[in-house]
Amino acid sequence: MDDSAGNAVGCGPQEGDREVCWRGRRVGFAPLDVDDAEVLHSWRSDPVAAHEMGLWPRPLSALRERIERYGEDQDRDDFLVLLPDGTPIGHAVLSDQDMVDGTADLQLLLDPAHRRRGYGGDVVDALADLAFGELPMHRLQAVTHTTNGAALGVLERSGFLREGVRRSSCLHRGRRHDLAVLSLLRAEWEALERPRSWEL
Image (cartoon, rainbow, N blue to C red; front, side, top):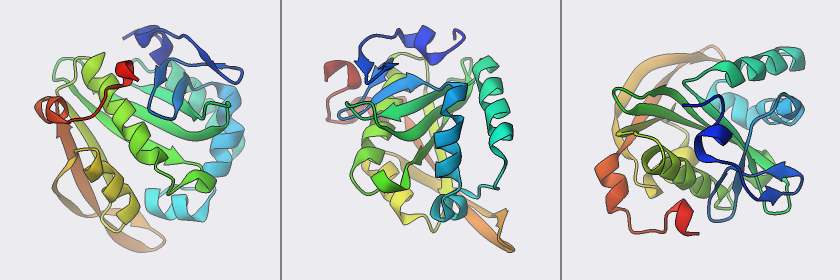
């Protein structure tokens, strides 16, 4: 893969002042930039996200450094998720990309103000279309707390199947939590009856 998702899939139209490289039904993806650290930091500081994702609060400067490292990582693509008017509403990631085995992990963090509006499914579908339609992936994986009903519902509606549970695999707020492992295979994605990102 090239240096960024933009190089991998080609950038085109703009959402607000950002160049969009990929598109879902109602959202666009722009390559993540270090200047996006402040908005990501605000989302990561949300107590619901911190609990459900097991995030540990870190300073803004550390997040900026992490985003700079993301840009150098050839095994991941990070996107700022935008509405048509350019409003940022989330951070979407294809990480741990293995081009030999054809596997990758899907991650999503939404702005608390834009949750439960259907954007999560739109983003997940668009990431799956990127993984299977533009990249040589065979298996896409997602992991979340077994108690994160909203995330589990979004993933299952997008065709992901529960594979199992990693028991007591996450320590957060003094308690051990189970993690659900879900996946979507290429053949299952191909069987989904919905428009693909490039058809929108």
